[in-house]
Image 1: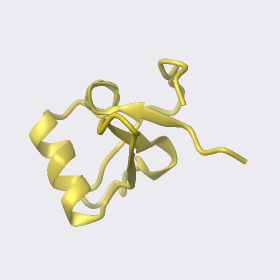
Image 2: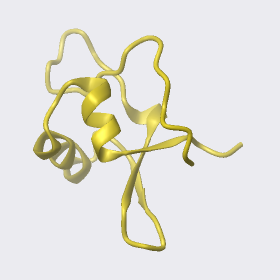
Image 3: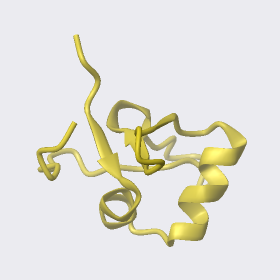
Image 4: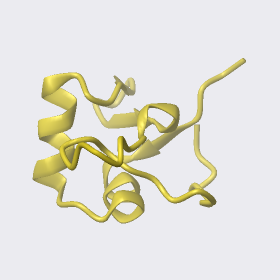
Length: 70
């Protein structure tokens, strides 16, 4: 099964944080990503989640609609 990916900007919209926060989560390993052949970063949607007791963790709405790209 292929994992769904989204852009950094889409991830920012979904979790309500800045690009800098997303980059911090990427560098700390809190969320997973892949680089495309063109060098863009695509975030694996299944790694966006929230621990309600830890505000440092990423979050995503229960229902969302990604931009359709893989």
